[in-house]
Image 1 (cartoon, rainbow, N blue to C red):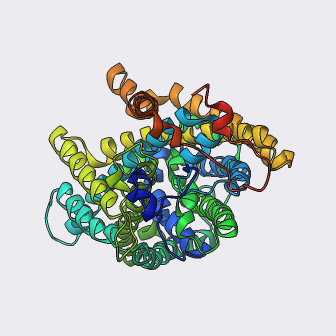
Image 2 (cartoon, helix red, strand yellow):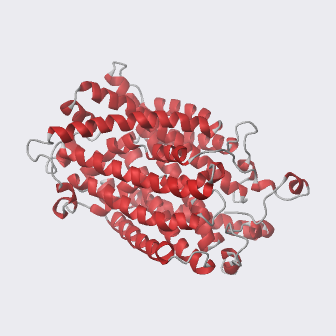
Length: 508
């Protein structure tokens, strides 16, 4: 989302609203951005959490879920990266939606994105607390409360998020390499050992008999949660060395590497026990199936390493989500949908320091909520809240696919039919089907028919979207001049392109 003119110190002194704030700065290359995005996806965390999907959905068909989600997102990325060439601001989803569908939809998408990332972040904090407590218990520390370690993590992440993002990128890079390495070791051993004694190495996970053996739509929805953050490559536009080439490269690299890793790793996790027995093992060992597999095939040392690196993987994940949410707040504040103070950047670090503090406060508040509610950190906070966030991320993908088609139909700045029409339409169909199937089977996930709980989890993303629209309407009513500055403009000013908002402003 971009205001038609960049603010300067002189114009602000003459009364222009300061809410546009300062742009972030940095020289991140594609590799650094991919590290940030893949770390946000938290590969080891996703693999360690995959037994939840095995237990609740289609068992041995879980590898197919990750493959299907990856293919859909790869097609989605075609339109996403094509449109990214014409979006000059660092707001990711909501800038795309706003550019294609107008200010109200863009504002709704902004708040939907905030809900999605905050929901998944708080779920990861709970998983981190649970895993840390379990690890320390295995080392003889006794039964420490999970929320204590979640609070410690929030404090450390607050420090890193307040500082320059390059520091976070270096921390994430080291942790990411280590967590990928332990899973690669396990996969190689399972493969060369020949898998389970009953079945050996097969491709059963990708056969209809297996992947249709449970609510596959719900399974794919849960798999989408593992890809959350890949599109945030666009959020780092202001901090990228050469945005026009860095962002598309990072986007494709992220979705391909994440998809391949998830699919292969979960396939070999299934092969270690056999597609017929995997679901039973997952039900019995939901929290430690990966460690059990490591002990069985390699030894206790690898299981212990996985337990330690799972904690660091979750830590890397919350660092990335903190950075992403902070930048969403910073970007939204720049266009006056949130208080201008949130668009302030640190004078030394160039980071969105005020937004970072707000994210920390929200994280603490949610942690207190889960503590008071008495919810189980793994089976309730992590599973239910992250699933609601996954619904939100799919809704954002759907809105973005529609906006890509609408944007290029209005502007005609790219006439490649595959990139601007066919690929976004195919992605839209696939995403809509997954969303429908996931919502239809949501009671399987929660394990209850309670309409209040199920309704709250399913409708929360829609409520966030409507709140965003409400904020924009309030801005239009009370500060019409500010609302007029809420414009979405393409990068090219040389071409005779009509602003998508200008052409649709009457509808807004």
